[in-house]
Amino acid sequence: MCGSMSKRVEVLARLRDAVVNLDIDGVKRAAREALEAGVTPYEAVMDGMAKGMEVVGQKYEAGEYFLAELIMAGETMKEGLSVLEPHMKPGDMKHIGRVVIGTVEGDLHDIGKNVVITLLTASGFEVIDLGVDVPAEKFVEAVKQYKPDIVAMSALLTTTMVNMAKVIKALEQAGLRDKVKIIVGGAPLTEEYAKQIGADAYGRDAVEGVNICKRWVSRGG
Amino acid sequence: MSVRRASIPWRENYLRAVESRQPEYIPSRIGVMWPLWNTYRERLEEIALRHPLVFPGFKPGSIKYGEKPGVLRANRTLVDPFGCVWSFNIEGFQGQVVKHPIEKWESFKDYRFPDPEDGLPAEGSDRLTPWSSIFEGLDRARKEGWLVVAGMPHGFFFQRLYYLRGFTNLMMDFIRKPPQIYELIDMLTDYNLKLVEKFLDSGKVDIFYFGDDLGTQTRMPISPKTFREFIYPSYRKIFKHIRDRGVHVYLHSDGHVVEVLDQLIEAGVSVLNIQDRVNGLENIASVCKGRVCIDLDIDRQYLVPFGKPEDIKRYIKHVVETLALKEGGLMLEAEIHPPTPLENIEAVAEAMEEYMWLY
Image 1 (cartoon, rainbow over the protein chains, first blue to last red):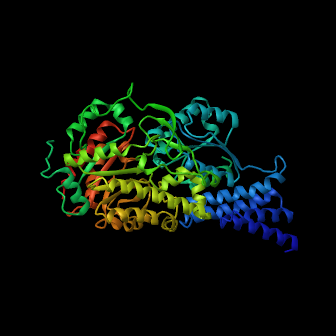
Image 2 (tube, rainbow over the protein chains, first blue to last red):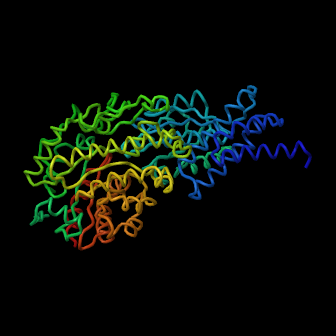
Image 3 (cartoon, helix red, strand yellow):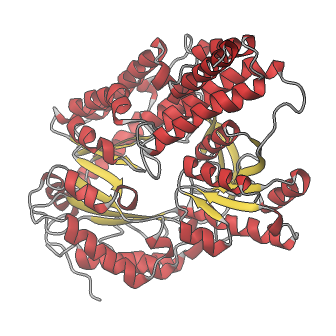
Protein backbone atom coordinates (compact mmCIF):
# COMPACT_ATOMS: atom_id res chain seq x y z
CA MET A 1 0.00 0.00 0.00
CA CYS A 2 1.52 3.36 -0.99
CA GLY A 3 1.96 6.15 1.58
CA SER A 4 -0.97 8.31 0.51
CA MET A 5 -3.21 5.26 0.34
CA SER A 6 -2.29 4.12 3.84
CA LYS A 7 -2.75 7.68 5.15
CA ARG A 8 -6.22 7.72 3.57
CA VAL A 9 -7.12 4.40 5.20
CA GLU A 10 -5.77 5.67 8.51
CA VAL A 11 -7.74 8.93 8.57
CA LEU A 12 -10.94 7.20 7.48
CA ALA A 13 -10.46 4.67 10.29
CA ARG A 14 -9.96 7.53 12.72
CA LEU A 15 -13.22 9.11 11.59
CA ARG A 16 -15.04 5.79 11.88
CA ASP A 17 -13.61 5.17 15.36
CA ALA A 18 -14.51 8.67 16.55
CA VAL A 19 -18.17 7.90 15.80
CA VAL A 20 -18.01 4.38 17.27
CA ASN A 21 -16.32 5.67 20.44
CA LEU A 22 -18.75 8.64 20.67
CA ASP A 23 -15.76 10.97 20.63
CA ILE A 24 -17.50 14.23 19.85
CA ASP A 25 -14.37 16.25 20.58
CA GLY A 26 -12.06 14.05 18.51
CA VAL A 27 -14.30 13.80 15.44
CA LYS A 28 -13.64 17.39 14.34
CA ARG A 29 -9.91 16.83 14.52
CA ALA A 30 -10.29 13.60 12.55
CA ALA A 31 -12.39 15.40 9.93
CA ARG A 32 -9.76 18.11 9.50
CA GLU A 33 -7.03 15.48 9.19
CA ALA A 34 -9.07 13.71 6.52
CA LEU A 35 -9.35 16.90 4.47
CA GLU A 36 -5.63 17.59 4.89
CA ALA A 37 -4.89 14.06 3.64
CA GLY A 38 -6.83 14.80 0.46
CA VAL A 39 -9.87 12.70 1.27
CA THR A 40 -12.97 14.24 -0.29
CA PRO A 41 -15.72 15.34 2.11
CA TYR A 42 -18.09 12.80 0.56
CA GLU A 43 -15.61 9.94 1.15
CA ALA A 44 -15.02 11.17 4.70
CA VAL A 45 -18.74 10.94 5.36
CA MET A 46 -19.56 7.69 3.58
CA ASP A 47 -16.34 5.70 4.04
CA GLY A 48 -15.52 7.12 7.47
CA MET A 49 -18.32 8.33 9.70
CA ALA A 50 -21.17 6.40 8.07
CA LYS A 51 -19.17 3.18 8.52
CA GLY A 52 -18.87 4.13 12.19
CA MET A 53 -22.63 4.54 12.39
CA GLU A 54 -23.03 1.03 10.98
CA VAL A 55 -20.90 -0.33 13.82
CA VAL A 56 -22.92 1.75 16.31
CA GLY A 57 -26.11 0.19 14.90
CA GLN A 58 -24.62 -3.28 15.32
CA LYS A 59 -23.64 -2.51 18.90
CA TYR A 60 -27.20 -1.32 19.54
CA GLU A 61 -28.65 -4.51 18.12
CA ALA A 62 -26.24 -6.53 20.24
CA GLY A 63 -27.45 -4.73 23.38
CA GLU A 64 -24.10 -3.09 24.02
CA TYR A 65 -25.29 0.39 23.10
CA PHE A 66 -28.57 2.02 24.08
CA LEU A 67 -30.57 4.95 22.78
CA ALA A 68 -28.23 7.36 24.60
CA GLU A 69 -25.26 6.01 22.65
CA LEU A 70 -27.20 6.06 19.35
CA ILE A 71 -28.06 9.70 19.91
CA MET A 72 -24.51 10.55 20.95
CA ALA A 73 -23.14 8.84 17.82
CA GLY A 74 -25.57 10.84 15.67
CA GLU A 75 -24.49 14.08 17.32
CA THR A 76 -20.84 13.09 16.90
CA MET A 77 -21.44 12.61 13.20
CA LYS A 78 -23.15 16.02 12.98
CA GLU A 79 -20.11 17.59 14.60
CA GLY A 80 -17.85 15.95 12.01
CA LEU A 81 -20.17 17.14 9.23
CA SER A 82 -19.87 20.71 10.49
CA VAL A 83 -16.18 20.56 9.49
CA LEU A 84 -16.73 18.74 6.19
CA GLU A 85 -19.81 20.53 4.83
CA PRO A 86 -18.15 23.90 4.08
CA HIS A 87 -15.78 22.01 1.78
CA MET A 88 -18.56 20.35 -0.20
CA LYS A 89 -19.68 21.67 -3.54
CA PRO A 90 -23.36 21.58 -4.51
CA GLY A 91 -24.17 18.04 -5.62
CA ASP A 92 -21.15 16.53 -3.83
CA MET A 93 -23.31 14.77 -1.31
CA LYS A 94 -25.15 12.00 -3.17
CA HIS A 95 -28.12 10.84 -1.15
CA ILE A 96 -29.05 7.18 -1.27
CA GLY A 97 -32.75 8.00 -1.08
CA ARG A 98 -35.33 10.48 0.14
CA VAL A 99 -37.65 9.97 3.10
CA VAL A 100 -40.65 12.01 4.20
CA ILE A 101 -41.24 11.40 7.90
CA GLY A 102 -43.72 12.59 10.53
CA THR A 103 -45.61 11.74 13.70
CA VAL A 104 -49.24 11.28 12.73
CA GLU A 105 -52.17 13.53 13.54
CA GLY A 106 -53.08 13.83 17.22
CA ASP A 107 -49.66 12.70 18.41
CA LEU A 108 -46.98 15.02 19.75
CA HIS A 109 -44.32 12.43 20.56
CA ASP A 110 -41.09 12.90 18.67
CA ILE A 111 -38.25 11.17 20.49
CA GLY A 112 -38.46 8.01 18.39
CA LYS A 113 -38.98 9.90 15.15
CA ASN A 114 -35.97 12.11 15.82
CA VAL A 115 -33.71 9.12 16.46
CA VAL A 116 -34.87 7.61 13.17
CA ILE A 117 -34.07 10.90 11.41
CA THR A 118 -30.57 10.94 12.92
CA LEU A 119 -29.90 7.39 11.73
CA LEU A 120 -31.43 7.94 8.30
CA THR A 121 -29.32 11.05 7.77
CA ALA A 122 -26.21 9.24 8.98
CA SER A 123 -26.95 6.49 6.47
CA GLY A 124 -27.03 8.93 3.58
CA PHE A 125 -30.75 9.60 3.18
CA GLU A 126 -32.20 13.00 2.54
CA VAL A 127 -34.91 13.44 5.17
CA ILE A 128 -37.89 15.76 5.06
CA ASP A 129 -39.22 16.05 8.58
CA LEU A 130 -42.88 17.08 8.70
CA GLY A 131 -42.77 17.28 12.51
CA VAL A 132 -45.49 16.09 14.90
CA ASP A 133 -49.29 16.02 14.77
CA VAL A 134 -49.18 15.78 10.96
CA PRO A 135 -52.55 15.40 9.21
CA ALA A 136 -52.96 13.01 6.27
CA GLU A 137 -53.26 15.87 3.75
CA LYS A 138 -49.85 17.18 4.77
CA PHE A 139 -48.26 13.79 4.05
CA VAL A 140 -49.96 13.79 0.64
CA GLU A 141 -48.75 17.30 -0.16
CA ALA A 142 -45.21 16.37 0.88
CA VAL A 143 -45.22 13.29 -1.35
CA LYS A 144 -46.39 15.42 -4.28
CA GLN A 145 -43.79 18.10 -3.59
CA TYR A 146 -40.70 16.04 -2.66
CA LYS A 147 -41.37 12.79 -4.52
CA PRO A 148 -39.73 10.66 -1.80
CA ASP A 149 -38.79 7.01 -2.08
CA ILE A 150 -40.18 6.33 1.38
CA VAL A 151 -42.86 7.67 3.72
CA ALA A 152 -42.18 6.95 7.40
CA MET A 153 -44.83 7.41 10.08
CA SER A 154 -44.60 7.29 13.86
CA ALA A 155 -47.19 7.11 16.68
CA LEU A 156 -46.93 6.42 20.39
CA LEU A 157 -50.59 6.00 21.27
CA THR A 158 -53.29 3.50 20.32
CA THR A 159 -55.54 6.55 20.04
CA THR A 160 -53.42 8.07 17.29
CA MET A 161 -51.95 5.05 15.49
CA VAL A 162 -55.29 4.63 13.75
CA ASN A 163 -54.48 7.82 11.87
CA MET A 164 -51.72 6.00 9.98
CA ALA A 165 -54.41 4.16 8.04
CA LYS A 166 -55.89 7.55 7.06
CA VAL A 167 -52.57 8.63 5.58
CA ILE A 168 -52.31 5.46 3.51
CA LYS A 169 -55.89 5.85 2.33
CA ALA A 170 -55.25 9.50 1.40
CA LEU A 171 -52.16 8.51 -0.59
CA GLU A 172 -54.23 5.86 -2.40
CA GLN A 173 -56.93 8.40 -3.21
CA ALA A 174 -54.32 10.81 -4.54
CA GLY A 175 -52.92 8.06 -6.77
CA LEU A 176 -49.57 8.19 -4.95
CA ARG A 177 -49.57 4.99 -2.97
CA ASP A 178 -47.61 3.01 -5.57
CA LYS A 179 -44.97 5.72 -5.84
CA VAL A 180 -43.63 5.23 -2.33
CA LYS A 181 -42.72 2.57 0.19
CA ILE A 182 -44.39 3.06 3.55
CA ILE A 183 -42.84 2.15 6.88
CA VAL A 184 -44.50 2.59 10.29
CA GLY A 185 -43.16 2.47 13.81
CA GLY A 186 -43.90 3.42 17.40
CA ALA A 187 -44.71 1.80 20.72
CA PRO A 188 -48.12 0.18 20.09
CA LEU A 189 -47.42 -0.85 16.47
CA THR A 190 -47.00 -4.43 15.34
CA GLU A 191 -46.08 -6.21 12.14
CA GLU A 192 -49.65 -7.42 11.96
CA TYR A 193 -51.13 -3.95 12.31
CA ALA A 194 -48.76 -2.58 9.68
CA LYS A 195 -49.97 -5.24 7.23
CA GLN A 196 -53.60 -4.64 8.16
CA ILE A 197 -53.44 -0.93 7.28
CA GLY A 198 -51.49 -1.55 4.08
CA ALA A 199 -48.01 -0.38 5.09
CA ASP A 200 -45.02 -2.06 3.45
CA ALA A 201 -43.08 -2.57 6.65
CA TYR A 202 -42.96 -2.16 10.40
CA GLY A 203 -39.77 -1.10 12.16
CA ARG A 204 -39.52 -2.56 15.65
CA ASP A 205 -36.99 0.10 16.57
CA ALA A 206 -35.02 2.87 14.88
CA VAL A 207 -32.13 0.67 13.83
CA GLU A 208 -34.38 -1.99 12.29
CA GLY A 209 -36.47 0.67 10.56
CA VAL A 210 -33.43 2.31 8.98
CA ASN A 211 -32.02 -1.06 7.89
CA ILE A 212 -35.30 -1.76 6.09
CA CYS A 213 -35.13 1.62 4.34
CA LYS A 214 -31.54 0.93 3.27
CA ARG A 215 -32.54 -2.45 1.82
CA TRP A 216 -35.36 -0.82 -0.13
CA VAL A 217 -33.17 1.76 -1.82
CA SER A 218 -30.35 -0.66 -2.51
CA ARG A 219 -32.82 -2.86 -4.35
CA GLY A 220 -34.13 0.13 -6.23
CA GLY A 221 -37.47 0.22 -4.41
CA MET B 1 -73.03 -12.16 37.65
CA SER B 2 -73.54 -11.11 41.29
CA VAL B 3 -70.80 -8.98 42.83
CA ARG B 4 -68.91 -10.67 45.59
CA ARG B 5 -68.49 -8.48 48.66
CA ALA B 6 -65.24 -8.03 50.55
CA SER B 7 -65.29 -8.62 54.29
CA ILE B 8 -62.42 -6.27 55.07
CA PRO B 9 -62.06 -2.58 54.16
CA TRP B 10 -60.44 -1.77 50.80
CA ARG B 11 -57.47 0.00 52.45
CA GLU B 12 -56.73 -2.92 54.74
CA ASN B 13 -56.86 -5.34 51.84
CA TYR B 14 -54.57 -3.10 49.77
CA LEU B 15 -51.98 -2.88 52.56
CA ARG B 16 -52.14 -6.64 53.09
CA ALA B 17 -51.35 -7.11 49.40
CA VAL B 18 -48.42 -4.70 49.59
CA GLU B 19 -47.06 -6.26 52.78
CA SER B 20 -47.76 -9.90 51.80
CA ARG B 21 -50.13 -10.43 54.73
CA GLN B 22 -52.71 -12.56 52.90
CA PRO B 23 -55.14 -10.12 51.32
CA GLU B 24 -58.67 -11.33 50.85
CA TYR B 25 -58.50 -10.55 47.13
CA ILE B 26 -56.05 -9.14 44.59
CA PRO B 27 -56.59 -5.36 44.51
CA SER B 28 -57.59 -4.60 40.94
CA ARG B 29 -58.70 -1.42 39.28
CA ILE B 30 -59.57 0.05 35.94
CA GLY B 31 -58.50 3.52 34.93
CA VAL B 32 -60.26 4.76 31.82
CA MET B 33 -58.70 7.67 29.95
CA TRP B 34 -60.96 10.69 29.69
CA PRO B 35 -61.42 10.54 25.89
CA LEU B 36 -63.06 7.12 26.33
CA TRP B 37 -65.31 8.34 29.14
CA ASN B 38 -66.27 11.15 26.81
CA THR B 39 -66.99 8.65 24.06
CA TYR B 40 -69.13 6.14 25.98
CA ARG B 41 -70.43 8.35 28.81
CA GLU B 42 -73.53 6.83 30.54
CA ARG B 43 -72.89 3.38 29.03
CA LEU B 44 -69.46 3.30 30.64
CA GLU B 45 -70.84 4.68 33.91
CA GLU B 46 -73.21 1.71 34.00
CA ILE B 47 -70.26 -0.66 33.70
CA ALA B 48 -68.42 1.18 36.48
CA LEU B 49 -71.47 0.91 38.74
CA ARG B 50 -71.84 -2.80 38.01
CA HIS B 51 -68.20 -3.40 38.99
CA PRO B 52 -67.55 -1.30 42.10
CA LEU B 53 -64.54 -3.34 43.24
CA VAL B 54 -62.56 -2.47 40.12
CA PHE B 55 -63.86 1.09 39.85
CA PRO B 56 -63.31 1.91 43.54
CA GLY B 57 -64.93 5.14 44.66
CA PHE B 58 -66.63 5.84 41.33
CA LYS B 59 -69.67 8.11 41.64
CA PRO B 60 -72.09 8.84 38.78
CA GLY B 61 -71.74 12.43 37.66
CA SER B 62 -68.14 12.64 38.86
CA ILE B 63 -66.81 12.73 35.28
CA LYS B 64 -67.28 16.03 33.47
CA TYR B 65 -67.90 15.53 29.75
CA GLY B 66 -66.99 17.69 26.80
CA GLU B 67 -69.41 19.53 24.53
CA LYS B 68 -69.55 16.60 22.14
CA PRO B 69 -68.70 12.88 22.52
CA GLY B 70 -65.48 11.31 21.31
CA VAL B 71 -61.80 12.14 21.23
CA LEU B 72 -61.59 15.93 21.28
CA ARG B 73 -58.78 18.06 19.97
CA ALA B 74 -57.08 20.51 22.28
CA ASN B 75 -54.91 23.39 21.26
CA ARG B 76 -53.15 24.98 24.15
CA THR B 77 -49.74 25.55 25.62
CA LEU B 78 -48.68 26.43 29.13
CA VAL B 79 -45.54 27.04 31.15
CA ASP B 80 -45.15 24.89 34.23
CA PRO B 81 -43.58 26.11 37.49
CA PHE B 82 -40.20 24.70 36.36
CA GLY B 83 -40.24 26.87 33.25
CA CYS B 84 -41.00 23.99 30.84
CA VAL B 85 -43.35 24.88 27.97
CA TRP B 86 -46.04 22.23 27.36
CA SER B 87 -48.19 21.68 24.33
CA PHE B 88 -51.49 19.77 24.40
CA ASN B 89 -53.46 18.53 21.42
CA ILE B 90 -55.93 15.93 22.77
CA GLU B 91 -58.27 16.67 25.67
CA GLY B 92 -57.63 14.34 28.58
CA PHE B 93 -54.16 13.28 27.46
CA GLN B 94 -50.87 14.48 28.82
CA GLY B 95 -49.06 17.01 26.67
CA GLN B 96 -45.43 17.15 25.63
CA VAL B 97 -42.69 19.54 26.68
CA VAL B 98 -41.75 21.56 23.63
CA LYS B 99 -39.35 24.05 25.23
CA HIS B 100 -36.80 23.26 27.87
CA PRO B 101 -35.58 25.89 30.33
CA ILE B 102 -32.02 24.49 30.67
CA GLU B 103 -31.52 23.48 27.06
CA LYS B 104 -28.18 25.27 27.24
CA TRP B 105 -26.05 25.07 30.35
CA GLU B 106 -25.61 28.86 30.27
CA SER B 107 -29.20 29.10 31.57
CA PHE B 108 -28.37 26.84 34.49
CA LYS B 109 -26.40 29.28 36.59
CA ASP B 110 -29.52 31.40 37.23
CA TYR B 111 -31.98 28.51 37.23
CA ARG B 112 -34.19 28.07 40.31
CA PHE B 113 -36.59 25.25 41.14
CA PRO B 114 -40.04 26.22 42.43
CA ASP B 115 -40.16 26.82 46.17
CA PRO B 116 -41.30 23.52 47.77
CA GLU B 117 -43.14 25.55 50.41
CA ASP B 118 -45.41 27.08 47.75
CA GLY B 119 -47.13 23.83 46.85
CA LEU B 120 -46.99 20.55 44.98
CA PRO B 121 -46.34 20.52 41.23
CA ALA B 122 -48.20 18.22 38.83
CA GLU B 123 -46.92 17.08 35.46
CA GLY B 124 -48.30 19.24 32.68
CA SER B 125 -49.87 21.80 35.00
CA ASP B 126 -49.07 25.50 35.17
CA ARG B 127 -49.70 25.79 38.89
CA LEU B 128 -48.65 24.40 42.21
CA THR B 129 -51.41 22.93 44.37
CA PRO B 130 -51.26 24.65 47.77
CA TRP B 131 -50.27 22.32 50.58
CA SER B 132 -53.40 23.32 52.55
CA SER B 133 -55.54 21.76 49.83
CA ILE B 134 -53.33 18.63 49.64
CA PHE B 135 -53.47 18.20 53.41
CA GLU B 136 -57.27 18.56 53.41
CA GLY B 137 -57.46 15.65 50.97
CA LEU B 138 -55.16 13.53 53.12
CA ASP B 139 -57.22 14.31 56.25
CA ARG B 140 -60.39 13.33 54.43
CA ALA B 141 -58.84 10.01 53.39
CA ARG B 142 -57.72 9.38 56.97
CA LYS B 143 -61.19 10.16 58.36
CA GLU B 144 -63.04 8.06 55.79
CA GLY B 145 -60.69 5.10 56.10
CA TRP B 146 -59.29 5.29 52.56
CA LEU B 147 -55.69 4.66 51.71
CA VAL B 148 -53.64 7.76 52.54
CA VAL B 149 -51.64 8.42 49.40
CA ALA B 150 -48.92 11.05 49.08
CA GLY B 151 -49.16 11.66 45.36
CA MET B 152 -45.80 12.87 44.10
CA PRO B 153 -45.76 14.25 40.55
CA HIS B 154 -45.53 11.83 37.63
CA GLY B 155 -42.21 12.39 35.89
CA PHE B 156 -40.60 13.37 39.19
CA PHE B 157 -37.03 12.55 38.26
CA PHE B 158 -35.71 11.00 35.02
CA GLN B 159 -38.45 12.62 32.99
CA ARG B 160 -38.07 15.93 34.79
CA LEU B 161 -34.38 15.89 33.87
CA TYR B 162 -35.23 15.72 30.18
CA TYR B 163 -38.12 18.12 30.52
CA LEU B 164 -35.51 20.57 31.80
CA ARG B 165 -32.66 19.70 29.43
CA GLY B 166 -34.36 18.17 26.39
CA PHE B 167 -34.07 14.44 25.62
CA THR B 168 -31.08 14.61 23.26
CA ASN B 169 -29.14 16.85 25.61
CA LEU B 170 -29.81 14.59 28.58
CA MET B 171 -28.70 11.49 26.71
CA MET B 172 -25.50 13.32 25.74
CA ASP B 173 -25.02 14.48 29.35
CA PHE B 174 -25.06 10.87 30.50
CA ILE B 175 -22.19 10.13 28.13
CA ARG B 176 -20.20 13.36 28.25
CA LYS B 177 -20.73 13.79 32.01
CA PRO B 178 -20.38 17.55 32.41
CA PRO B 179 -20.19 18.70 36.06
CA GLN B 180 -23.52 20.53 35.71
CA ILE B 181 -25.51 17.31 35.27
CA TYR B 182 -24.38 16.09 38.68
CA GLU B 183 -25.31 19.44 40.19
CA LEU B 184 -28.73 19.42 38.52
CA ILE B 185 -29.38 15.88 39.78
CA ASP B 186 -28.45 16.91 43.33
CA MET B 187 -30.79 19.90 43.14
CA LEU B 188 -33.67 17.77 41.84
CA THR B 189 -33.06 15.16 44.54
CA ASP B 190 -33.13 17.81 47.26
CA TYR B 191 -36.27 19.34 45.78
CA ASN B 192 -38.05 15.97 45.83
CA LEU B 193 -36.87 15.27 49.36
CA LYS B 194 -38.38 18.58 50.50
CA LEU B 195 -41.74 17.66 48.93
CA VAL B 196 -41.54 14.26 50.62
CA GLU B 197 -40.84 15.93 53.94
CA LYS B 198 -43.93 18.13 53.59
CA PHE B 199 -46.09 15.02 53.20
CA LEU B 200 -44.40 13.18 56.04
CA ASP B 201 -44.90 16.14 58.38
CA SER B 202 -48.64 16.20 57.64
CA GLY B 203 -49.49 13.07 59.65
CA LYS B 204 -49.99 9.42 58.87
CA VAL B 205 -49.31 8.49 55.26
CA ASP B 206 -49.71 4.91 53.97
CA ILE B 207 -47.86 5.15 50.69
CA PHE B 208 -46.06 7.56 48.36
CA TYR B 209 -46.95 7.32 44.67
CA PHE B 210 -44.19 8.16 42.20
CA GLY B 211 -44.29 7.97 38.43
CA ASP B 212 -41.32 8.14 36.08
CA ASP B 213 -41.41 6.53 32.63
CA LEU B 214 -38.02 4.88 32.38
CA GLY B 215 -38.41 2.55 29.42
CA THR B 216 -39.12 2.60 25.73
CA GLN B 217 -41.06 -0.16 24.01
CA THR B 218 -38.20 -2.60 23.55
CA ARG B 219 -35.53 -1.56 26.03
CA MET B 220 -34.26 1.15 28.36
CA PRO B 221 -33.04 4.34 26.67
CA ILE B 222 -29.98 4.18 28.94
CA SER B 223 -27.91 1.22 30.01
CA PRO B 224 -28.31 -0.30 33.49
CA LYS B 225 -24.80 1.03 34.21
CA THR B 226 -25.85 4.57 33.30
CA PHE B 227 -29.00 4.15 35.38
CA ARG B 228 -26.86 3.01 38.31
CA GLU B 229 -24.62 6.05 38.00
CA PHE B 230 -27.15 8.81 37.41
CA ILE B 231 -30.63 7.79 38.57
CA TYR B 232 -30.33 5.03 41.13
CA PRO B 233 -28.52 7.08 43.84
CA SER B 234 -31.30 9.68 43.90
CA TYR B 235 -34.08 7.09 43.85
CA ARG B 236 -32.35 5.29 46.70
CA LYS B 237 -31.94 8.47 48.74
CA ILE B 238 -35.58 9.54 48.29
CA PHE B 239 -37.15 6.10 48.71
CA LYS B 240 -34.98 5.12 51.68
CA HIS B 241 -35.94 8.33 53.45
CA ILE B 242 -39.59 7.32 53.10
CA ARG B 243 -39.13 3.64 53.94
CA ASP B 244 -37.13 4.56 57.05
CA ARG B 245 -40.27 6.31 58.26
CA GLY B 246 -42.30 3.12 57.83
CA VAL B 247 -44.13 4.35 54.72
CA HIS B 248 -44.43 2.45 51.44
CA VAL B 249 -43.17 3.55 48.05
CA TYR B 250 -45.17 2.89 44.87
CA LEU B 251 -43.36 3.45 41.60
CA HIS B 252 -45.00 3.54 38.19
CA SER B 253 -42.95 3.29 35.02
CA ASP B 254 -44.07 2.84 31.47
CA GLY B 255 -41.88 0.89 29.10
CA HIS B 256 -39.34 -1.90 29.19
CA VAL B 257 -37.42 -1.79 32.49
CA VAL B 258 -36.42 -5.42 32.98
CA GLU B 259 -32.71 -4.64 33.19
CA VAL B 260 -33.18 -2.27 36.15
CA LEU B 261 -35.84 -4.14 38.12
CA ASP B 262 -33.22 -5.28 40.62
CA GLN B 263 -32.01 -1.72 41.06
CA LEU B 264 -35.56 -0.47 41.62
CA ILE B 265 -36.18 -3.11 44.27
CA GLU B 266 -32.81 -2.33 45.86
CA ALA B 267 -33.70 1.40 45.87
CA GLY B 268 -36.61 0.66 48.20
CA VAL B 269 -39.70 0.33 46.02
CA SER B 270 -42.57 -1.51 47.79
CA VAL B 271 -44.95 -1.64 44.81
CA LEU B 272 -43.82 -1.70 41.21
CA ASN B 273 -46.39 -0.64 38.60
CA ILE B 274 -45.02 -1.85 35.27
CA GLN B 275 -46.38 -2.93 31.91
CA ASP B 276 -46.82 -6.62 31.25
CA ARG B 277 -46.25 -7.00 27.53
CA VAL B 278 -43.17 -4.82 27.11
CA ASN B 279 -41.43 -6.47 30.07
CA GLY B 280 -42.71 -10.02 29.62
CA LEU B 281 -44.72 -11.86 32.28
CA GLU B 282 -42.01 -14.49 32.70
CA ASN B 283 -39.33 -11.85 33.30
CA ILE B 284 -41.53 -10.07 35.81
CA ALA B 285 -42.27 -13.32 37.61
CA SER B 286 -38.64 -14.38 37.76
CA VAL B 287 -37.29 -11.06 39.07
CA CYS B 288 -40.16 -9.64 41.11
CA LYS B 289 -42.47 -12.39 42.37
CA GLY B 290 -42.12 -12.71 46.13
CA ARG B 291 -39.59 -9.83 46.31
CA VAL B 292 -41.73 -6.76 45.65
CA CYS B 293 -45.45 -6.20 45.23
CA ILE B 294 -46.24 -6.13 41.50
CA ASP B 295 -49.02 -3.83 40.31
CA LEU B 296 -49.33 -5.20 36.82
CA ASP B 297 -50.43 -2.86 34.06
CA ILE B 298 -52.55 -5.10 31.83
CA ASP B 299 -51.75 -4.96 28.11
CA ARG B 300 -53.16 -1.57 27.17
CA GLN B 301 -51.46 -1.47 23.78
CA TYR B 302 -52.65 -4.64 22.07
CA LEU B 303 -54.98 -7.05 23.82
CA VAL B 304 -57.31 -4.68 25.63
CA PRO B 305 -57.90 -2.23 22.76
CA PHE B 306 -57.79 -4.71 19.88
CA GLY B 307 -58.34 -8.20 21.32
CA LYS B 308 -61.46 -10.30 21.76
CA PRO B 309 -63.30 -10.26 25.10
CA GLU B 310 -62.74 -14.00 25.62
CA ASP B 311 -58.98 -13.60 25.01
CA ILE B 312 -58.84 -10.76 27.52
CA LYS B 313 -60.51 -12.94 30.16
CA ARG B 314 -58.23 -15.87 29.45
CA TYR B 315 -55.19 -13.62 29.66
CA ILE B 316 -56.15 -12.07 33.00
CA LYS B 317 -56.62 -15.57 34.44
CA HIS B 318 -53.17 -16.50 33.11
CA VAL B 319 -51.65 -13.39 34.71
CA VAL B 320 -53.09 -14.29 38.09
CA GLU B 321 -51.96 -17.90 37.79
CA THR B 322 -48.46 -16.76 36.83
CA LEU B 323 -47.89 -14.00 39.36
CA ALA B 324 -50.19 -14.44 42.36
CA LEU B 325 -49.09 -15.85 45.69
CA LYS B 326 -51.47 -16.69 48.51
CA GLU B 327 -49.60 -14.33 50.84
CA GLY B 328 -50.08 -11.36 48.46
CA GLY B 329 -47.69 -9.24 46.44
CA LEU B 330 -49.89 -8.74 43.39
CA MET B 331 -52.29 -6.06 42.16
CA LEU B 332 -53.81 -5.52 38.75
CA GLU B 333 -54.37 -2.31 36.88
CA ALA B 334 -55.88 -1.68 33.47
CA GLU B 335 -55.35 1.77 31.95
CA ILE B 336 -57.73 1.88 29.06
CA HIS B 337 -57.20 4.00 25.96
CA PRO B 338 -59.11 4.63 22.74
CA PRO B 339 -60.10 2.87 20.56
CA THR B 340 -61.00 0.14 23.11
CA PRO B 341 -64.56 -1.10 22.51
CA LEU B 342 -67.01 -1.03 25.39
CA GLU B 343 -67.32 -4.83 25.48
CA ASN B 344 -63.57 -5.12 26.08
CA ILE B 345 -63.81 -2.78 29.07
CA GLU B 346 -66.61 -4.93 30.43
CA ALA B 347 -64.48 -8.04 29.80
CA VAL B 348 -61.58 -6.58 31.79
CA ALA B 349 -63.94 -5.70 34.65
CA GLU B 350 -65.59 -9.13 34.70
CA ALA B 351 -62.28 -10.97 34.52
CA MET B 352 -60.72 -8.88 37.26
CA GLU B 353 -63.73 -9.40 39.51
CA GLU B 354 -63.68 -13.11 38.89
CA TYR B 355 -59.96 -13.85 39.21
CA MET B 356 -59.13 -11.39 41.98
CA TRP B 357 -60.53 -14.04 44.35
CA LEU B 358 -58.57 -16.93 42.87
CA TYR B 359 -56.22 -17.23 45.81
